[in-house]
Length: 322
Image (cartoon, rainbow, N blue to C red):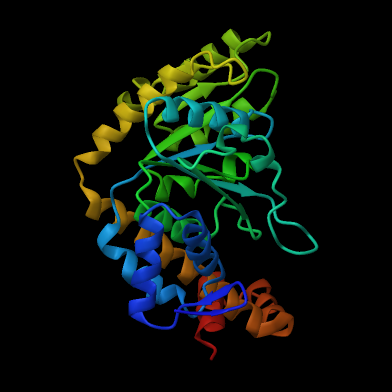
């Protein structure tokens, strides 16, 4: 492994393995470098991913999602504190909205995660959403693998907070925590047809506010008309700022994680690999559509409007173009 200034270059399998070993030994700089290379998908990324494979599948990945204003970051901070009291090492991926200028993460979530300050048992990485409407970018999955390989016991994944569209977390997390809060109005109604279907645990945060019990009852009512397996879903009330209800949430996370453990590490890794393949395929389709240009789309659109071509056949023709 060579160094140019402060920048290390990973060019061989041996150098990648050495960096992964340093990361597993607890070196924060090595962890940060691995994550940066994976996020950028640099030339070193395939070497690092290959070196990490034997260390994957042991961390419990918990996804936190829900509408804006639910207090996700504050609750994640409280969960970090509770896990650390239990002696667990923690990795955190906070997916922030992308800056419209640089494309990078705005870092709003990380500011609120004070439990991670000066604690080597916690590693937090803010990650830009990069415009992915499902709440995650493929880089998030690669970073999950890095933190898993680093030996973190629990990985907390906080998505960007766009509400019902934010269901990609279901594909990569072992346990899905859907957070709401009183006073969010129609967000509870919107959640009923989307986020409720992916939840393993429902949380009403800001439980000290007026209307918290009513929101709790609304969620219980929404679950009561779902399938039997949905009706038994844990629905908890927390106040992240005081820690009330957080031990119960962590206990529910661990219980839900134990159920998923029966599938084994390979099943966890396979699920995330399926997500990456599907996302890559989606990106390739989008690239092909863009390559066709507006003129090609307009020509096909006119044929669809004229009834000479169906939408499905138009899509096939567009994607068949080199």
